[in-house]
Length: 80
Image 1 (cartoon, rainbow, N blue to C red):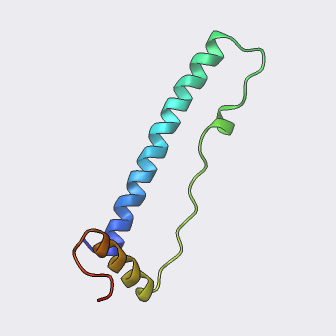
Image 2: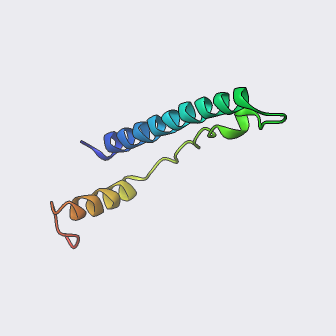
């Protein structure tokens, strides 16, 4: 996989985690609101905000990230 594909996979995983959290928060909010509440926070205040759009990377930055990632996986030496 190229760095762009890896970034998209990681971004997708992060989005899926936020959506799972939002579903759990919504369920807890509905349960608590139905059981008891004189005044309860708005659901929109409890849900996560959309993530900021990532800035584009220069090819040199991508190469540096890929080199560090490959070195951590033992594929290449960092000095290469």
